[in-house]
Image (cartoon, rainbow over the protein chains, first blue to last red):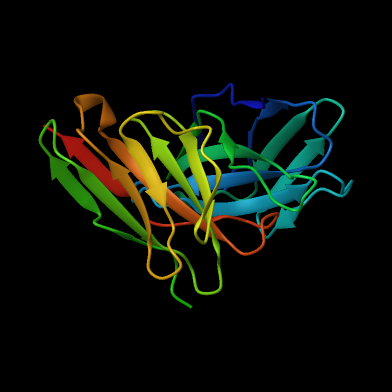
Length: 118
Length: 113
């Protein structure tokens, strides 16, 4: 079974600063995806970024980027030029791919509550 | 393209009643996942379905909970004889062929009184 650990229950930064959220995971699988999801107060789960384990290049989506260290099983999220709208819970998630072409359900961490201060 | 739809958004049930939660996946998506989120926690996987098939129900309690995804119509998560501990937000996600992102619905908040 996989586990995902987010060691920062809450973080607070000033608007326009850069912030990094940490995530580590434990698995014996070699074929998997990693995700960061954002959950604002509306509780809607919004996909922020995705990383395929077989790719060495770190994923980037506008102000969001990841630092994927496969050997260390680490998958941190960096948010540059943070904005008030970035205030939300952020969840790291693991998805195992099956040999038959399917995928297991996501395994989530407990989340980090990110607060962007004006 | 409409997103994943869930209804109702809020559901209140008394202990012992049945709760039925519905999920309509995005157009073209044939894979549905259900998750439960307890207060102050992350989401926990419950069940993974394809049309007319349960693929993985390893996260679903053995009793009182069932799920289906018929050939026509939405996926249904059914909770029989609800108890206070069932109070949570239940999220549905859909995907095209697995291996891609899962797109989440807005969730159904179940309150058991």
